[in-house]
Image (cartoon, rainbow, N blue to C red):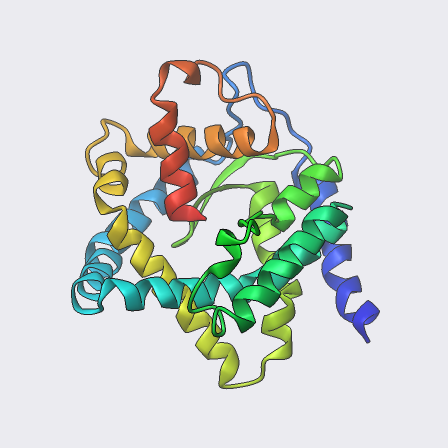
Length: 253
C-alpha cells in the first residue's frame, strides 16, 4: 500500500526533474525566463497581502495573546516534524532522522502535544529538511526562478518539492476529516503569526524597495543557495546578507 502511495509522486518527481530543472543560471547567477509571468504573480501576491493577509495577521497578532500564538505555532511545527524525518531518510541523513524523531517524541509528550518546546532546551534543536533539499541532494538542478500564488518566491525544483512534501506528509495522510483541516488551520495561524512578528522587515522589502520583485528574487535565491551550500547570486555580496537570510527564513519557512 505504501509503495503504491509513493510510486506516483516519485514518478512525477523523476519526469519533472528531467523536464524542468536542467537549465543553469546565467552569468549573473539568475535564471528567470518567466519574469513577465512571475512579475504578474508578484503583483497579485502584493495585492492579496494588502487586502487580506496583512489585515488578518494584524488582527490575529493584536487579539490573540503572544503565548497562545507561540503555542499554536509550536504545535504546527511539531506536526511538521514527521515530514522532515521522511526527507532526512531520503537524503540518508540518518543521524538527523533520529535527532528529529527524538525531538518530535519529546515535544509531543512532555511538550503537551507540541504546545511547548522542551526539546530545544534538551539539545534537540530544530534541524529542517524539505523535498526541495532532497532533490538537490539527488543532483537535481535548481531550474528557473518562479513566483507561486500566495506562497511567493521559489524555483522549479523547490516548487516541485512543496508539492511532494504535501503529498508525502505522514501526519496529513494519517489524519482523517476534520482532523486534517485542524492541521491546516494551525499552519495558517503559524503563518499569520510570522507575518505579524516580522511585519516591519517584510514590508521594508515588499513595499519600500525600488524594485520589490528583484529584491525578493535576490533574497530567496541568496538564502536558498546559502542553505544548500551553493554559490549565491553574483554581486549579492554587496547586499545586507543578514537581512536577506532573515527575511526568507523567518517568513517563508
